[in-house]
Image (cartoon, rainbow, N blue to C red; front, side, top):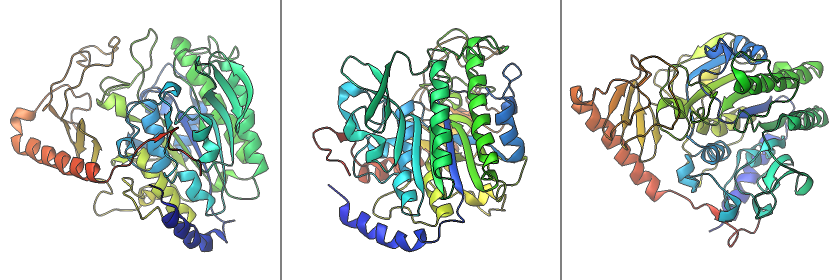
Amino acid sequence: MKFVQSFTAFLLLASVASAASSDRPNIVVFLTDDQGYGDLGCYGSEDIATPNIDRLCVEGMKFTSFYVHNRCSPTRAALMTGCHAQRVGVDNVVYRRERIGLHADEITIAELLKTAGYATGIVGKWHLGEWDDFNPVNHGFDSFFGFMECDDKKTTAIYRNKEIVEKIKHKTDGIHSPKLLAAGIEFIKQHKEQPFFLYYASPLPHVKWLPHPRFKGSSKQGTYGDVVQEIDWQVGELMKTLEELDLAENTLVVFASDNGPQLNVEGYGSAGVLRDGKWTNFEGGIRVPCIMRWPSAIPPNSTNDEITAIIDLLPTFCSIAGVAPPADRVIDGRNILPYMRGEQVDTPIHDSFIVPSASIRHGDWKLLVKGQNPGGGKSDRVGKTDRVPAPAGAMFNLKIDPSESTNVAAEYPDQVAELTNRMSDFMKDLDAHSRPIGSLSTESGK
């Protein structure tokens, strides 16, 4: 089913707001791939030098309970739609062979910002459909410079919009970083006279780690650390461009990762004190670093410990831009602008974060509705328990046990019952208000 009528009405309502857009902030989202909670200096890393990202932290706000999904495509779908990925049918990684992608009826963050007069661009990794029908330019982006598979042999290519620029071997090869950076800088310069939204979706530090020669051997944490330091360089160059164009003061910069680190490879990243990593719903898989800098609104050197999530970016950006989120569907995210401004909030904006059918965090409590197996790899902390499974029904107090090492379910049966009921209520709502993923047989573009 199409939502053409409702979306048309939405566009008409938004047109009033878009008329006066010059004072609205630019928005840059820098999303990394498989970077752990402990892989930045400002989050405790002692072996990886990230001065540019650390500067964002000093000049902005550090979020300590920011949640995503535990795999790539679901998190990116959540960012684009403001919904849990399962609500929009993206419950797994999207591959070309499956002939699926983000549904044409989804109203993305890029489409919403366009109604407020924003130029919209994406650089890097899309991963929400590897066919032209699902190309980002069909989902509200004015421009796309980045990676998609281009044939059934799993050949990856760099695209400019829908045209192949070059076929490549590894999108994680550092030789491509200067190309992505140049595209990001070009986009900023082209649209410096109007508000813009740049989604810089780095393919790093996903395996295979192939750092640019400039960064090879630069880190105390081996090749993985080299790649993270390459990311830091890109952040620094983008910030330099914003400063040179006198845009930095009124640009919201968001830095985050799409999920926790991959632990089943030698030289892996770190989730810090959190348990496990990618592919799991332990905290190390779904809680990631997030930093926001916006000098005209966000207090410097500040920290927010409340539950926030990638789903919150869409409604928050809508609030900033002066447009309303879609009203014809459930949006799971919430406007967290009060947190960003450092305002006092009487009740938490989110009292829970739920991974459908799998886990629920409510306040300080975390219940595993579904048993969790470790994501693979070795432990880098003495006494760490994350290399063993945790059963369904295990519960942890994250305030005193962020490593999820002690199952306290037997001691708090009433709390277990409450969280179980909350999950049940959520799943009923999800079942009643979920939407399908797109397929080549149904897509017709936007």
